[in-house]
Length: 332
Image (cartoon, one colour):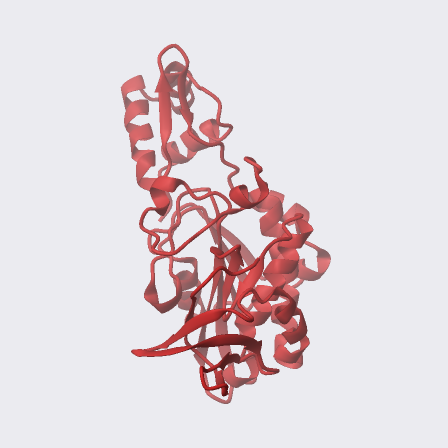
């Protein structure tokens, strides 16, 4: 499922965002200049655009920082490192979540971590596609095995959201919030999403694949298919260069301990902090459950992590699932 060796090599050479002559690239790859041109045109399929200037050569429209296990491991703490059984980085994969779900069905170890540079079929909630251009964002999944069944990990996606906010704060990204049950938001626009897929016994051992998609830089051309307001870290911070490997390691430092302890501590440990980041409380919203639409004012979450909505008649109802759409500006 990897991209070709020549594509990876040319990407490594062009990752700095500087101009490289066709002759330089041809010599480095051991191919003709016309073959270089064909390789570059193939990069568009990965969501990467390049420019060509006579007398200067070729360059990517934006520099890349490709993921490297060695650089991620430099950031990973001893606590998080002890929880990792394997760490894989795929150049090209259909979905990191699907890959680990399949691994879990084939005796994959708890603590398996999978990153991808590019996903051909990244998944969001309700089967939506997660737009996944090459080398631009974080596409991460973690496999974890629990002993007490799905009921014992109810609300896990909310705790994962808290962990993501903690990690972002370590990188001075402070104006972000959480939208129930599993989205990361900034000023009414989606920055990232969490997808937890659970399988196994109802009252016995189960496995969970925890997926995270986080926008660092999303090219406008790639984002045209997105049907909701979105943002990325370059827009939020105003920084053109973001350090993907450092952020990847920081995310693992915060995610893995939360996942490892969750079965014993549960959602109650994270409810108050989640409320601090709630970007919908007090907002007018519509909750969609199948074909049903429920209008009201969001009143946060209860102590079990379920959504509270105040109906027009003043009643406050509790909901365990559904998809919520806010009807006005949300903050942060």
